[in-house]
Image (cartoon, rainbow, N blue to C red; front, top):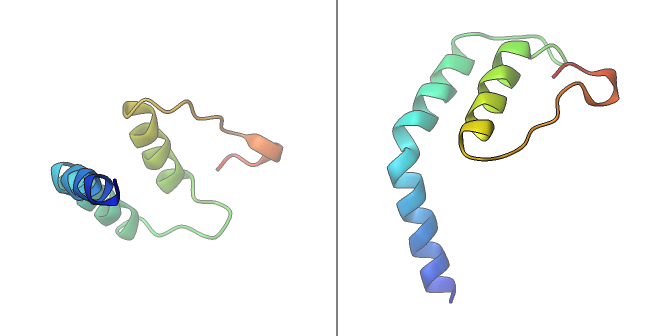
Length: 64
């Protein structure tokens, strides 16, 4: 079972590495102060929603 999980994860990461690399570079190139990461948060919310996650923002009165 673990072999199949490992193979699935390696394949998944390999298929999506370009998208993850682009996001990591976008975040790196747009530094933000702690607790004010609106740019990075927006990119990650968009990515998660694109992959089928339901994301709730503004939890506990925090925009990020």
